[in-house]
Length: 154
Image (cartoon, rainbow, N blue to C red; front, side, top):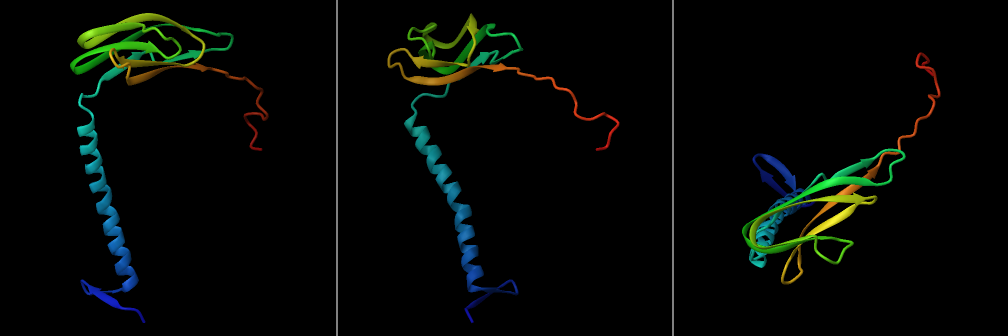
């Protein structure tokens, strides 16, 4: 018979004790790992995050429609002064740039038949900082005849 441990009047086998130890260790490790990861992330990024939004973010095309025509409103905000440019992923030239600003807004007409990604990039390094997707969805609702009568149970 294996060794036993008594805990609060209950008899525990050696196997149960080792499982409890592993469980306790597993519960403690993710918290330590998460705290280490957070501090590493804070030290590696010298600038705070940017709030970046595109409205609307979705266009639903009905049957017979092939292209979305929407006016998009782009907004970004940063707690520190930044020089940023807005890019559409399939174009090499920026749509709009801002120099030494803490916020920016831009409205433009978009014609799209497929989903399109937009990025905010640093002006000097061309490093992407944040991205948003304008999604195009096709509403392919097919109507079909019901196979049974509404009063039928089978």
